[in-house]
Image (cartoon, rainbow, N blue to C red; front, top):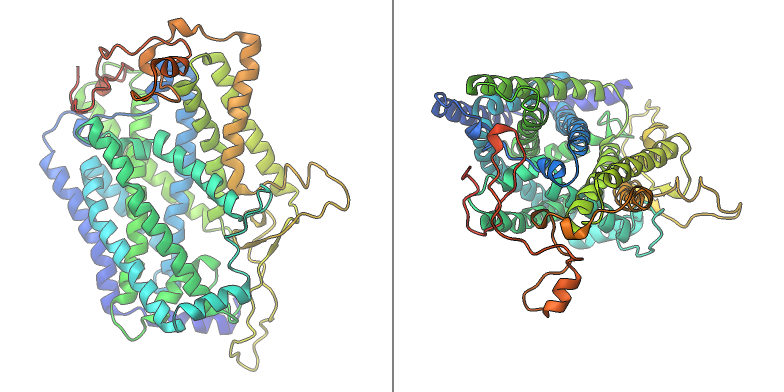
Length: 559
């Protein structure tokens, strides 16, 4: 970085005052305290029930419905995906904090990882849930504070709308269905929608929360109500991004060397608009870190549960309760260390890798959602077809994604960022040109790309068709290819007998008591009616058993 940029960075860090540090540090202290409290309360417990809330997982379903091999493969890929996701989750806010405080990037990564790992290892899932409640309040308060203050600073909604129009940032309402358009309405809705669906219905981090509820009815309510905060956080985040763009229009902070990486823009914005209000910058940075603490803590607890139940207990089913607790905490500490090391590795790159991480989620999430869809809704598919379809979908998305990185298309032009309105020192050598912040590998995943039509003057090729698909659509591609591949393979390997299908593992596409019986029977595809006499899940023995679907049966009850 040039000398001028270093001076600017130093002056910004000076604005993060003692009260900001007190507020920020308090978040870590309180989170660690909660973990210590629950660890002390459950110190005499000899079961993993309190640690994982019974250790319930979604992966045993795949063993019941198909084969243990499918369960192991999906579990391994989910762990890989989660580790990468959590590494990015730790890295991004740590990078942001390093831009506005004297703390180095490596220090903030270490503090964040250590705090999450400590209270999760000590307090288990109970500590994770109660810290989530506290952290969620801080998150929404901090984000709303920045949004409201930012709107005031830039001069109101009209100024924001005008800035969007001048800079071409009002591109979210492009309704062209072409999947190659990077950020159209449809690619966002379908792409993000598929990944969100996969996380809610088959991701251990979410499933463990639903199964921590007392009854099936309460779990369904939790799933439905979870959409409210998701929508709120999404809208507030979008609003903050638009306000931030209006504030820096014509003087991009990265080009003017106020920051060293694009991900540091938001905390810089918070520090600048709250420079005369002590503590508010600390509140916003705390809000960002609360999101990290919440995600990483539940993530490593879920990873430990997957590793314990899917890989250790099947090999050592007779482990004592004391050894189960030991291995559970060992895995929590181990995954926490891996996430921290991955964050350190990510910090060595020079690019914006957030969208790259989301694309990796599409590589894995799409096929995973596909195999669960095959199991739940398509009883004619057996384990051979499901495994082949899953691997085919995963291979297709990886092929398309990697090929797109190596051979990037030009279907999306980057939106302009300039320093035309900046006040520069006379000896500054900063060029006032459009900025390209991403290197060759990650340029494919640029989220500021402008939706444009694809030039077909040279004819249609795989380069400007398949390889040009928006990264948001990788999950959709993986889902479709998994379903298709499973059916194609099943033509040669054979379909399952519908009359012998297990009704407890099948859900009809349409099954409403108000519909005629003939309609309901048609959508059962010949599968027998569920008996409602199956056993409860017994998660502590590491074996897969059937779950009762009675609405108000306690989820905590075991056979």
